Amino acid sequence: MKHQTNYDVIVIGGGPSGLMASISAAESGASVLLIDKGKKLGKKLAISGGGRCNVTNRMPQEELIRHLPGNGKFLYSAFSIFNNESLINYFEGLGIKVKEEDKGRMFPVSDSAKTVVDALLKELSRLQVTMWTETKVSTIRFEPESMHTVYLTNETVLYAPSVIIAAGGKSVPHTGSTGDGYPWAEEAGHTITDLYPTEVPLTSEESFIKNRSLQGISLSDVALTCYSPKQKPIKTHRWDMIFTHLGLSGPAALRLSQYVVKAKKKYKANYITVTIDVFPDETIQAVEQLLYDAAKQEPNKAIRNVWKQLVSERYVLFLLNHLEINTDVTFHQLTKKSIAQFANSLKAFPVKVTGTLPIEKAFITGGGVSLKEVHPKTLASKKMPGLYFCGEVLDIHGYTGGYNITAAFVTGNRAGEDAALYALQKEGAN
Image (cartoon, rainbow, N blue to C red; front, side):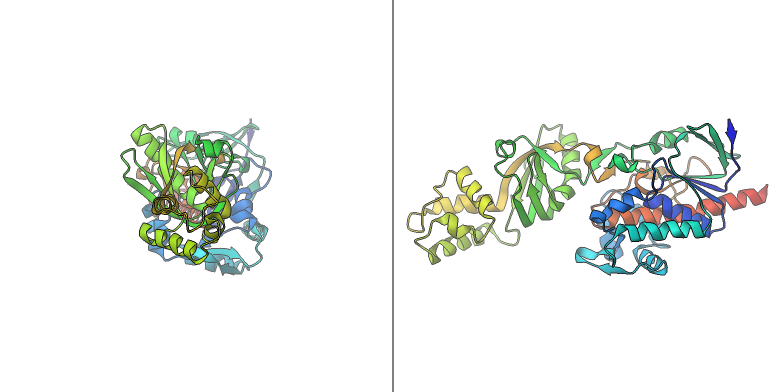
């Protein structure tokens, strides 16, 4: 076996949390080795925000934590030391000017993720972090009283008092997130909570989905609500959506996905009903009035040509056909019943959702290393001294929009600093 020199801190995983953990550990005076099995560091960062890199979200802390429905409250302690505003200042300190867009999303002014990745790599080099790419970890042997041993597949053996697992979840596997970190965590005595896809398109077996009659129709600012089998509303998300050949996608559908997954499991249901409301600010009576007034204003026009001014033309035609309402009737032939039926469909069109695309197609992994076993301020393991976790390997997840990346950077920052302090104290004691 090839033996390597010791490091104070070994970071496994070169995504957002691993890069930040390596920088934070090096800034705290530790010698750091960053290992990634991919060819390039920061691969997930490079594709985030549609390639523009949504570095964080500027929402107030309470709002930000609400947008991390998967255990966001765990981050209060870490945020008290390093938060989204700290991140903005940090990036500006690296020379990356950022700008605010809708819903608090922060992007580099360059509109290029490459700017962010390059700046972080430059900082790693400046701090003399050793970086190994195309390097796979096979196993880790944890020694609570001495050095942890990291075995690589190329037969190299590494020793360090502190190991940070930043290996990601199981979503977007082409970036290297294939769930490698979970068995290492279990080896150290940790519990992995159920893994499931979040921020993932919804699937449906409805005939109008399968025959693709709705495919490609996008609806803006709709309210999507999922219901229990007893028709109790579980969760509503309001944003844009699009019909696909498999079901529903777009921000509103992605945000609802975790609730669909959990409800299906909880109720052991074959499908969960999701309703689409294209007039979320109006009552059903107001929508009926709107339809009536629009038709009355142009009494000789076919209703499909009148109502298409209110909603996407293809969606209007689909709903009229679905309800078996003649698309050519004018105001003169229009019945109250038809208006009521159409208004009802605009306010609550039901779709039986059978599930979601698999975890590999999700943006984010739900579940992970149980937070009961991790210190919230330092991200240190409660089970194994000198072991740390950060990023998506933890049971923390949020909506898209800069929330997950904030959690990754913040947990990376805290884990890196404490891992360095722990290693340096341990070495000082020896």
